[in-house]
Amino acid sequence: MLKQYRWLLSCTLAATALALGACGGDDDGGAGSAGGEEAATESTGLTEGAKKIDPNSMNNASGDVTFCLGKDTSGDKTALSKKFNEENPNINVKLLEFSTSADEQRQQFVQRQEAKSGECDVFYADVIWTAEFASQKWLYDMTPYVEQKRGDLIEATLETVNFDGKLWGMPQQTDAAFLYYRTDQVQERPTTWQQVYQVAQENDGIVYQGAPYEGLTCDFLELAFAAGGKVLSDDGKKSEINSPENLKALQFMVDGVKNGIAARGVTTYMEEESRRYFEAGRATFMRNWPYAFALGQDAKAVKGKFEVMPFPEFEGGGKAGILGGHNFVISAFSKNPGAALAFTDYMIQPEIQKIEFVEYSLAPTIKSVYDDPEVQKAIPFATELRDAVSQAKSRPVSPVYPQVSQAIYKNVNEALAGRVSPEDALKTAQEQMDQALATF
Image (cartoon, rainbow, N blue to C red; front, side, top):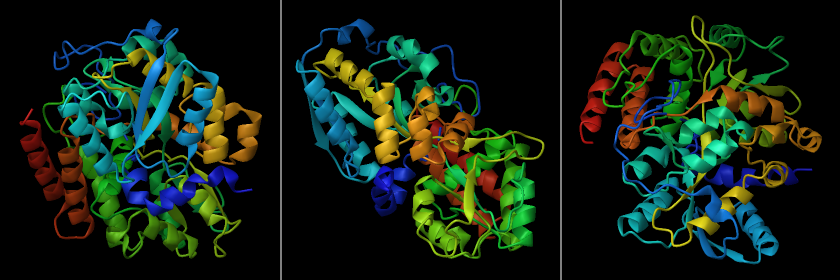
């Protein structure tokens, strides 16, 4: 019965390393535009001269392809690479696995690209790496190929590969968080975040990821983007984090902690602490990733007493989530880009994405897969997940994203903990971001 949830073991063991590198996660388009803003349509010249993929190069391609990725704990990529090799005898795909840590995976790829090594033809890249890798011209510009597939994809996922007006990868696996709620305490689904907190205050509160790490960046941006906030200017050169909209979102979160609506220890919680708190029956609502759905079915206190929903509106604003997931990117130093593209194309075919969803609960980027009757039967939250992904935004796409994120989560945590005011937190975050942005 739980075959389709095999991925949950790896998510549980590496929730902060992978799920939140995917945070979303796993956000999430232009040279530095934040999620929730229109993607860039003109190049700034930052990636001028980058190699561009020829979609026809995958026709009759042959030879060896090395697919680099983190530890394949779910086993899906190993199984599907074998399936590809059996169906495409002229191409041989072999896997090169790195660490389960998203940071270590990134470093392994960076080292190879800095050395102009062609060892990795295709890389399973975290959605937050696009701008850094593309700005160094380490990737093929895949715009000609991806544009042919645009109509098949959930449009929001394209934000994660958009940088400098070009598309640098193929969205292959996506993710977005849910709002979990207790059906024995919530009579009707709330339509706004303000209603969520009101109902939470009348019952057992809300729990989310408030510790100073990437997860808090996702949690804050989900509210900030919904409130109409931005992180970076449209040209990506300046921070716009210190805005009335972002202050409204942060003040909302701070008030939730101050008034005892949020879990007492929320400023120290990551995914697993949040999940265990909710599963113990101590919260009415929980913000968390889809991996917690199946695990909750085995928790005595909440089994059969909870459901999930996409995030509601923020009063006076709109709806927003943060995209997680991974993209297939092709190294600019690959000696066989045609065969690498053929493998990439195979891995986004509806039948392959269906296998990954049903057997491994890896969310598809292809819209039609969610409507498949077998998928609907196997994944009870398929429709909710598609809706959550569709309304989600990417995190700020910037070559200095790690510093941008750190400025967010450290200062937001300081405000939640009551050590600084929301106004001072955003002012400091803006200063830190502008310092980082001035380096490129």
